[in-house]
Image (cartoon, rainbow over the protein chains, first blue to last red):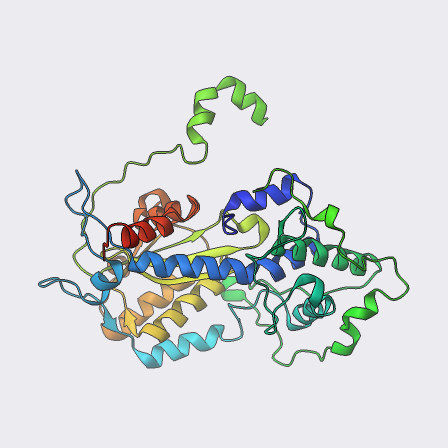
Length: 221
Length: 166
């Protein structure tokens, strides 16, 4: 099974010309793969916390047992060195960065735009009722991972849309440290109607169906 | 350029290939949980926009927080992630250990301010240790396992199913 959070998978996208860092590539990659990578890496962390660390030859200081048990219930007489967080001070500190949203990776308007493209091709992409993609599904003949088809299809749609002179907003990176200027609280209204997926194909030669020949990575497993 | 180096130093190149580095880890003793929180980012996927940041307890190796986002190389993001973690867990670790990256200084400052709230005489170098990232071995070893294709998933699976190991 191909693991998505493995660097080699993305190296494959680069070497086959499926990713070159354009805006369309970046948006499509974040939209399709961020939920998958989060799921894989958070799942990895849970497994790590629950796995047993074994005694190792030549390393007497290694404490065997599961991390989660050692952390919450260390064997006596080991002391816990943590202190209770002073809540007032924590709240004050949090206020300085509350305008930053760590979980955002694409602005709402761009997310919605991508979702609309997927929704209008839900049958071909076999999207589930909750709007999610089961990335392990293999479709087509010869078989290819669904996430790969979805990525390439979305990328082509987006590059067509952007090439027509349209723009899609990207999330801002909070640069500047202590001089960071938080984004304005009231975001300008975005007319989501304008982003209806169907509209981008009207009168253009954009992709209207999935071209299977575009969806294979040579030598990918 | 790469070709050139490969010609001049074939053994050097081979030794750095994926999975060929054998890191000798020192044996170090930590006295208990929340004594040292080791934090660092994982940037193997950063080229494509996926940045991973995590904190691991050096005694138990428990991953206390882990985050995948697009901006964990900024001080604001790391500060917010650390404060969110404190808010959720309510436990302030004694010392944080990190490398000298530009993304860590606001977190370091906040961590020390919180300690000074508890103890006005708290000393900065008791509560924050900077070191090179290669010495930050608890978290580096965790990243290494992860980039080796999640071998741990299979280790756990086999241990559970085959050996009935709990």
